[in-house]
Image (cartoon, rainbow, N blue to C red; front, side, top):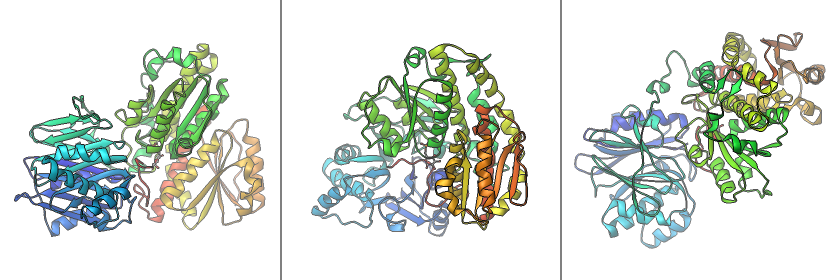
Length: 611
Ligand code: G6P
């Protein structure tokens, strides 16, 4: 989704901005643009539809550069992907602006600005920001004052960076709902929608809070809060490694991230278990008393994180007496729900910036509808972490591929850590919680073993490239894994993939099964294995092509219609994590064979900061 980078420096900034945009590419976008104040202090702009590389080529052909600049990757919301809609947007020669988010009242503002004589060159909501700030700039005489005035009229979510020839060596930025960070240099400063974009130039950051407007100069930063008061925000030093955005030996970030899973899992386990015991500090200090009171759990998430939540529900209800429900945030936030007693409200998000998930959390907090909120998140500085009472961090490291992989498996692990901690809080350590803690230690090595299947799955992928549809089947906690496998395949290979709980096959999807329909099944050992085998017999009898990821102890027999890919025997509670890996690899290799843009699939975004 849209990305912002900006710089105020004593050196030319175009290269810094282009590199920043490259680092934001993983968020998903359809066009890019940049504006600088040139050596004669004129506003110069260049925009291009398509990749950042197109913009870079355009700049080589028609160079523009300057020491103050803003740049943007746009993911179309209002108006098609086209150069006229790409950011920065300008108001005559007065100013240029880049914007993430949505101005909900843009039509009313457009009308108002029209009555003042402003014309519009784009279909975007962003252009009203440019004109409204320009209108106030003429009256107020300062970009900061103008932005403080204008923001009172904006309804919606935004992160903004604005520059104006009226005030060289200055950026004014604002945050409401969409993340925005200031990067601190020496005699130069930067702004960005995530730190990845700024890591080549600094590792010291100020995270703006909702309602903040900031003046960013060469040597000075001033931040004003929602009430317009001058405030201090802490400076944080990031340990994020620049190398996280390097591909190294891998062809795609997705493959790199799939192979990083043993390390991500080991890091997420670190300091959280001690001889069969879940350390309560996992979710914060003095939380056991709160967790002991939990009578219900509501999990809220979107996309892949929602699938993690669905698995979590199976686990929580299998080992505790706490009822657990799971819902996608976009539905939950607009639905009336009776308030429940002593409910733990759990949000799951790799980015911590997903607009729907944040809105669901805000809703429950406003209604005072939960005992406590707890986020499972991969970004420590994110809005979700800051807004939640307790946090359980996944330690997956930055995930660049749009299709989530290591963030998902570490979310599953985090749910197990939460489960173990809950059991301890409610009943004290039990044999089951001790076994869970011991089994979890096996995970990194098991995942490592399953990754060795990579060449086998690469070969198998060849059988999918001419397919248009596919079915994924699982039962119990493997049903959400089937959903996740299908999501991965459709996201990056564009093959239509649907997942069903295998017992539901007979109620509709069976009508689709013929020799052209690949049916992927997940068959670890466990209570439901024999049931699953019967479901697969039914597919087999109708000529379906079966691809079964099965435990070596499942005794699945291959034949001309049945391809069996054997996985090591694993404890039942670990199986959903372990069986995710081959499905990720399958989607990856099918996409590579089909020649799609694996890391940046069409129309999708990594961080969905709009509704
Ligand atoms: C987007 C991403 C998915 C992610 C979903 C939820 O659709 O492409 O990978 O699962 O958003 O994001 P979150 O950051 O809340 O987990």
